Length: 251
Image (cartoon, rainbow, N blue to C red; front, side, top):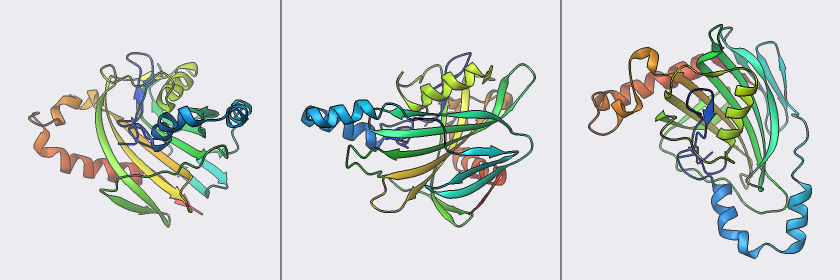
């Protein structure tokens, strides 16, 4: 995820108020930051190449039942618990500097209200730039032999809709087109990012989201001074366990 809630930068998945997602990254991604910094220096040839790159093509990964299969970058199989239904995927050019491919497995009620979901994103910078991903690592986990940067966030999606051109907004639009919306604006997200090779120009990002409303909780409860602030470490630890426990990664 380009610098986003990525805090890919992830502004984590933040669904739009009542119907869908909004941006999910808290901070801009490295890609976004690099794009803003280098925009004035782009020459006509690079601009022409970027224009051609706007066609991201069809998704190259596929779902086989409960398993998402990627044949490269990285070559991996991710199997999700049976409570999660695969609802599709799409690809697009993010911030004009990277190709992103998103896939979604959701746990929703009969009316399309999402209680939990997994958002899987394969992302890589375009050959028209030399950017690389750079994350501040405060926690890491290993899943299926892959190392992931791990961070968690509580968000009120209505209050933090994010950029209209973000990957979160794309996720929102895609899920809304499939008839899904978050059960409430109060959510908590676990982000897992695996950086691929050197110089780290590709990444696999998995975001696990839960509805806080069902627990009678709000994102503000975990903010400094909030009524549950003292429990954040415990809560985020259990969130990570649930995120990892609901999937199996193999290579």
